[in-house]
Length: 350
Image 1: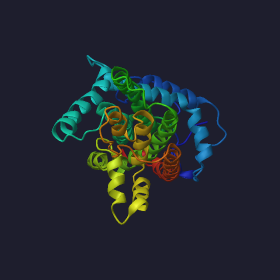
Image 2 (image 1 turned 180 degrees about the vertical axis):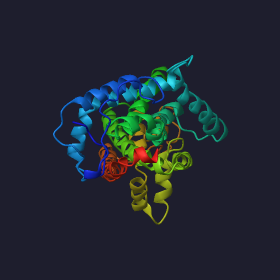
Image 3 (image 1 turned 60 degrees about the vertical axis):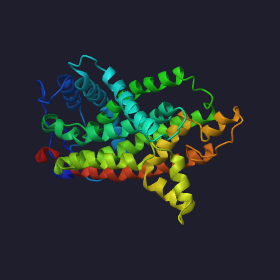
Image 4 (image 1 turned 30 degrees about the vertical axis):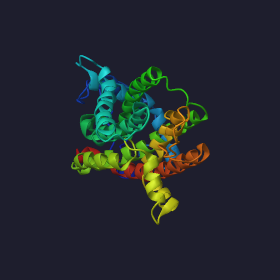
């Protein structure tokens, strides 16, 4: 029995029964994706249309049924990025190295920020940001770039932005090698301990928040193509509003010296979940809230109590990540519902 497209209840559009042959989507692996979609479409199904109401649990089950398509599209995104490239996946590792070179010159040589072990500090936050910004950039074009696939066969359209998130997570693994290499070369192990427990919590918060906004921009760009251009400006602004190259401790100090105090800092972390998430990665990997005091203690020089990271306990940092996770889950429900309702019109909009 033929499946129908998303979102319009009894008025849903039925998917093609015979989607044989190569799909006109650009990139590698499209033929295999079409074959798998066609195979899934040939399986018997009881219902003939999507329920007009959005049910997250049922939808998750539906997405699980199409998990092979998600894996194939993710693999396609990665292959397209590095096909015919001389250095291949090495380009992914060169990205943080170039950022490190530029920011080290600006903040350490010119501005003399004085952050000890600056490469570790920068990379611990920058790699998480690269996942976020890279996924949103790819997701904004995920539906548009797969227009031929969307028009020919049925599959849950959420798979398209989700595959973009998966591709950037692959890059994150490669870029993580650069961070580990610097930690080994600089013998940076003194601050690693219980704070490492924040790493999986930070990763969960990062993925959930990224998925939520990826669903939003993926659907929005189908109708308003200016979204992808506005997104680049928004990400540039957001980058400098988030303590990645400058200390989070500086932001905390400035808030405490205003009439807003700790309340203002908490509002800032809630309004900008990426600040909490980046802070979690920095606490897990960089670890040193007071790196100056540790370095100067052996020399007998006066201890400088200025802190680099957010000056909270590990438990409080975990609570901030928990808030970010809660906000992300709420945003996923909102933007997923919006994506689901708009998905039925994608074929006409493209």
